[in-house]
Length: 342
Image (spheres, rainbow, N blue to C red):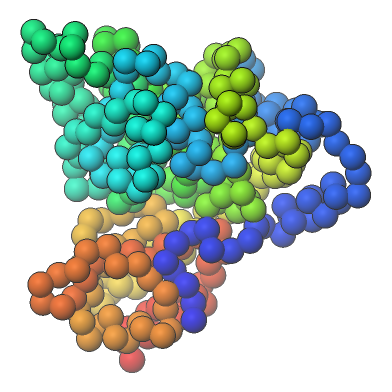
């Protein structure tokens, strides 16, 4: 069976596996002070266009979200998130477990927080005379792409940055699937823009060709983050295993090439499904696609194509998620289309 249920069901890019194998024959400095990690950080600083950026390597997305937010928020502060945001729905309360409330707002059909929605929420919050007794918004959490494949535009991100500045909030972007967003022709957001507008964001590796790992990028030096992620159990003793992966990903454009493979395959799949008059809910410009299939069409995929049910429908059909990845091939895409045509 060909599995489109998620984008982290494979190992890692061959280049990374080769780098790990080679590094296995040597000894390395610990806790991220090794040569690979230092080199990877310099390459990321160059990619985001900020030589002052402070870069850290963590293991996974949920760990990264909880660790970063617990470090940048004061004890009485919470984080504003779309109601469908990963930290609000699919992280088992990881952020709340650190003592910080997730303050949810409505999102558009693609899971994006619109600037006007954020502004209205903040105005309403501070218009309440009792707000000093409430959890204060201290940061805004976005993901690019969103859980529904939505992509922010540069203008929207700049406007959200301006709103954060107006209200003294930090802007944090979850980039678990960032490579696929950067590769999409439907957004003008770049690594350099993220480095400019975000207080902190992360470059996803786990879902984008690495064996594991996320690269957290702060716009400015964060002297307190080393002990903060040590305290949370997020500091890997064999840090070279993370560093060398990002050193490899940011050599010769590998990260963007891997992202382009996943996004290109997703777009090819989207066009093939559209040609079959299959609708989408919502429309996605990234590596995740959400076709609406009838019960008969679902049966055609069963046992042949792995997928995730996104929403059950009253007529027995469903909105499903098909996730392409750095490992997906045109033959995999054709297998989905051929199964539905059968």
